Length: 527
Image 1: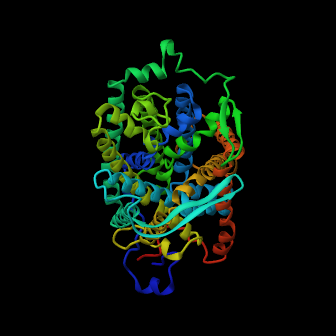
Image 2: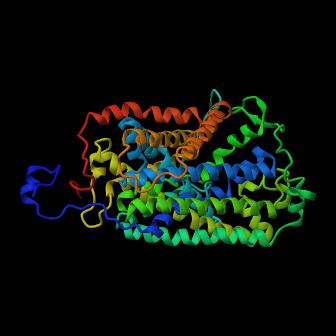
Image 3: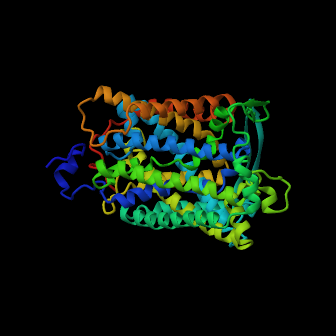
């Protein structure tokens, strides 16, 4: 028997079955991957920045509603693409098939360079920082080898540099977690999925506990400050004619903008916290009954996370005043806007449980970040695997382990680059740059839905995007508006991201001249 793409020697001498991706993810595991990849440390931190930007309880919650609407429409739209093309690589495949291989590669390039690996690095360093609550010797200031301080370099509206490079106990812990998860996910999909199921369930219970505690132990001072008599304080600064100050770029002028602009401008934090919901599409080749389970897991996973995020933010309003004094000496005095180091979740529990609150929240974040990093590690390697099969990445990354049927090289390459970002100190700055680029790719992917509806009218579509064409069009309009606002008022989040994407063009030209694409994924190369 001849195996497509195999060498003549293998065709005549090898009778062992060639490993393929194993369909080992059921509906629960798929949903756990969606939810677990979304919930990291963001929901416990970004609310402070959103509160400072909106300066209104109503707009603060409105920002989360906008994120929820965008993400749910995106999930509903991606469900059609996933059911139509249930292949490893997910969004990379959708862009390749709808807009062409260059766009697919640029997405995969950006994913590897910073979106997936940078997020893994950031989440794992957050794990190290919060582990320091229990073990004080683990800290970003406890240097084992301090290599250099890179000073701030003004570049137009941006500031590059301003980072410490070296090995401290926090990022060393992060690197250990990166490689532990990379290695664990080599030993079969079932083990990685089991870890994901356990930690996603645990973090879901932790978030539920935070919400319940916030609803039960409401603070009279916070209620008066955030809602007032007849909800007068809740709607403060949220009128159509209300103006909000925004600083253009870094060190630029402060201008006044309306509510449509300010809600779009603060999406950097909320969208990042709700991101990675698309990771389940990367593993489509390993989902059982993918034409049903992927669309369903997208809806269930994103619906659960977005609901808990909104309720958690509401719980913060019930426990802490929104406004506060940055020099305040108590949790209530600092409020949500000026919570110490932006740790709003910790501040809320500290107000309820006093000193024990910090330990409770640290434990919750450790569970959350570990599960998030596992989901990101498991899913990301499948994109590089698909790229390699197309001849657009290192050839070894397209090989599967003979016994475990996992992309070993992809997992290790991803872990090595994420570890380097942990040590470089640059991952947090890189993450600032990706939100705009990610929005652009989301817009392009949903635009691809329209393209495929036109070009492949007769293709099987077991699931069709709910509300097509109105909802996908609404997504494009809303996301495009956020991009325009970020280009105008937050250039430090936009132009660097575009540069990172465009750097992929010469790389694509290099790779595209190499080995030809292997269409039948997972059938020829093994380790």
